[in-house]
Image 1: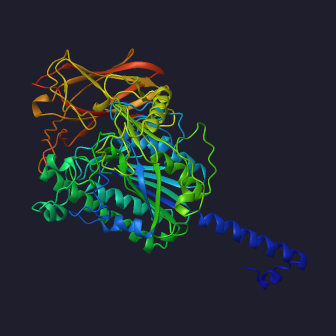
Image 2: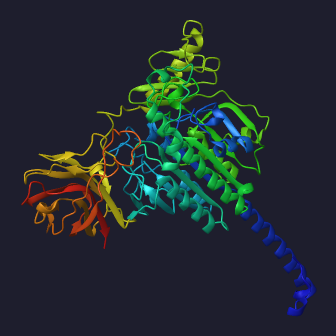
Image 3: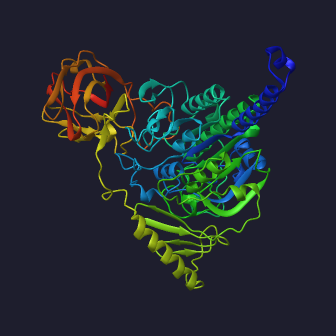
Length: 600
């Protein structure tokens, strides 16, 4: 503040007053900047509403996650989507995924339109340092990559699921890197490092964790607690009849690992003296990935009933939210962007109207007139609408979920007027947003590459098409590779849209036996082509079986090695990129995981 040291600088009294006022203004402005809240958003993958001890599950303990409700707020009726990528799109944009081209969870159908504004754009534009660490699942190539969508730093994987959780192949801002240890622990480490580095500037960090999504891998100390544990079934739910106890034990062990990592994050905020001014949000992306305890709710992942759509939503912000706050109004993932922007004092200038609304007044405990509203959802031909009291399915099923949250009694005959009103709302929403089925409908868009702002472009097997003898390693594409490459007539193609001209160095991540050394490969696009020969064997075994606690449905991975293919000239436009073998000296050419293009 004001100091007589100014006198020693030879300043006149009038100048002293001016300096004094200026210093006060600087102090006020600096205080306002420093007091803008930090934001940490934690999104888990395939963890249901019932996978918390907070919600009465007797089979596990989640004290750190539960503490967010005790020390902050719980939104009692919070809704997401039936599966992963639609929920991510709705959280990131504040808009329904059906408006934005999302119709699937892989091979390009998970991407929301490039002209959408994201929560990363909003907070970076508001002066925040931004980062995302974990499962992105909203597009891999620019302009869909996290770095192109408002996040300064990104570490994780962009696909819908990953094939191995220990020291896995990941990416950091587009470049392939190797993970450190168990993936959830590693992602948490990155968040802590980011918050430490950015503590003098407001930060927004998004942590989309990859568990308890399969593969069901978890460190021994968690598995040892659950592997022989007696599981108490959900006493009122049909889920209990279909429960696989080994899968349930693995999922619960993974949830306790998540809880410990949440505890690490909260402790860091306390130790760094950031807790009071940091908003911590915790929610899940869909219902549970197994038939296990879910508070008696009907359905699981993939369902548009309560059990597939209802998610925990816990928000702690000591500077503005009183401990133990309960929000009973319905809310959803689309509401988080406007809510967090309001808390941060960021004026939204959305290029498109949001479907979400800010629930900040409810979280603050303000007495406000709250309008009736409706939350819509769709997945793979199924549609639904939730009002404050009722849920209507597109099939005509009608439930009073306020009094019958388990959706056991159809009340269509009891409330015909309410049924008609909700049907009109649902029909109008479907007509406006045109939900697409996840299989066989959706507009097939090319995979983008060579964006002018991107150094790296990754083209994985996930986004490719096999021809001839070549097959995908598993029917779930996200973490697959191409295999059974036995002849020179077979090929792998990508339907691509080249976004800028340039020279690109190309690497292929591959595995092959010694007998495949000498295989001659050709990569071509239009009139451009390059030819190279495999000179080193990578006879990697399949990885993941030893670490799985439950037999997976998805495929396994290998220890992929990079191999330089050469330099390729790319020109703008839509084209087919083709990889084929010109000579195969052994029984197979190679197993191909991905191509990586680096702009020169």
